[in-house]
Amino acid sequence: MCFLLLRFFSSTFQTRAAAEGSHFTDVRVKVKVIDVNDKTPVFEGLDDNKVYPAAVTEKTNIGDLVVKVTAIDADGEAPNNQVSSF
Image (cartoon, rainbow, N blue to C red; front, side, top):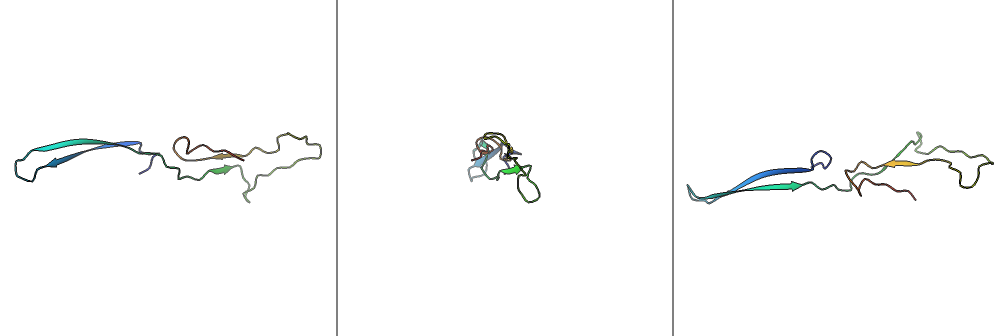
């Protein structure tokens, strides 16, 4: 069952006594599909060698931005679709 396609579904079940003409009862069951952390985060903007291209000059100051690394995660909802870098 895919969380991204179906978040809830419901169905009705019936139980009936074995004897002919017996009593029966219906019950409605509502099922919540829970997101599972099953997607791997993917880096965006990589070159063909799966490397972020970056270069600095000798005049680059400490603390200057050299490259911005971004990633996405296709899981359905937080916290499973949140990414962080270290």
